[in-house]
Amino acid sequence: MCWPVCFLVRTSVVYYDKLRSVLDRCLRLGLVHGVITIDLLAEELRVGERVLREYLRDLMVLGVLEYLGAGRYRVNIRRINSVTNYFDRDRIEITDFFDEELVNIIRASREVEDRVDRIFSKLDIEYLLDPELRDKIRSLTVGGSDARVDGARIVGDRLIVPDIVRSFPLDDVYIGGSSYDYSLVNKILRSDIDEPFAVLTLAFISAASYVAYFSGDVLDESKSLRFLRPVFKSYDGRKPFIRGEPFYELVTSYPELLDYARNMAARLIAQKIHYEVVLDAINSSDGDIEVFFMGGSLFPHGFVLRSKKLLILKRKVERLFEKLIATAKKKNILLVGVNFRPHDNIFLRIVRNILRINISYINDTNALIFLLDDKDTTALINRFREKGREKIDQWYEFYMKIRGRVIKAEFISLGEPIKEYVKIRDYLYSSSIPSPRDETTFGPSPMIWATMKAADRLRVLSETFTKVIELRFSEHIAKISW
Image (cartoon, rainbow, N blue to C red):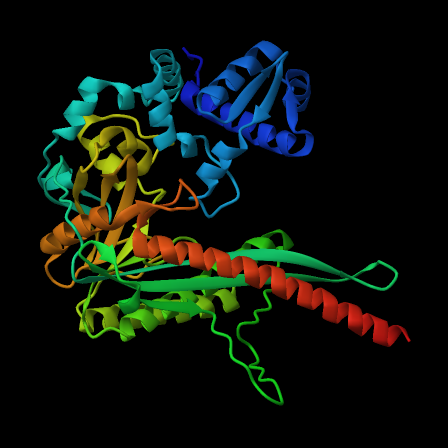
């Protein structure tokens, strides 16, 4: 006898994909039309209005949309910007909105909490709002195979260490901070009859570092040092030109990957300049810098397009990283990467192994926003192997919650990881402030200064050089036209 075979599709997968599709379409239509209507969305997505309203209600709960009445919606630009500020990618995911603002929205109203609970139930992650399961996760102890997943292990027997961070005034101490920024601009140069003549892809990159001296918990500018890259010099007479760098001609058999390759090249060059500006700072030190907080991951990892130029560039970045590590160790400086929205799920995978809960879609940051209280940290995690990165035995990381925000800190141990973990978490908490310009930017104050300076410099570089290229090209066209 033959029995029919039934394939059951997980409803959470269908719901997530549909909601993400509606989100993508809302962002596109909102950019074009400003106001989005039910009729327009239903026609675009080819779904019924009743089903569509359910997805739109969920996006409203997440703060993505604002309802204007009469079936009209508007994209909440402030909410979108607050989320995309942390990410270096084009596509927004639904889980990107599981952040600190959502926690605040939940706390504001029991009705909103119930609505978020329904969204989480559809995704099979309702345990994040279950107080009993939350307490259970917070009290979990691990050991043996429970404390290890592929490429990482927990150091210690507690997954979450509650209310352990110490806050203290900064006195007679140097703390370093750095950050970088970059952007790609596709510029069309036109002839004198306004026809496209050439298309240039321009990568603008900047990096900054700051060695801040604190005395009596007050910043002393006179003893603090600033460094910027790129560095510009004036030359008399013939201008220097170095062939090959930083100019990269990327060729691929797949034209649709060219934009990705250019973006990857810009990221790698930006990371290279970032390492250089950090080396500038620590080489100026006589070993008096306690901790150096670098914005973002210590080392970019993951997939790299198999392009000869990209691989050569990646090896240059790796060699410079090794030089940075060796220099920092020689001067006994702890290098710490500070990351706000990593997409790792090491912590959750260990929780899943113990409690057998679903972790689809969400990452460690999504979960820890709901699981950690202020001054809590996770256990120290030793990452001894990771895809796309050379094996570094002394690579450690942990998460902590600072004034409502979850931050991931990663560092390369100088030999005493537990003592360094204590030092880093206390310095990180004690030196962290919100940015005076943007409430979504948060972290150690020297790193905040470097972040703002890199962004300012990038804007000036982009605006100035784009205008110079346009002007010089116009002058050239005028000359050859005669």
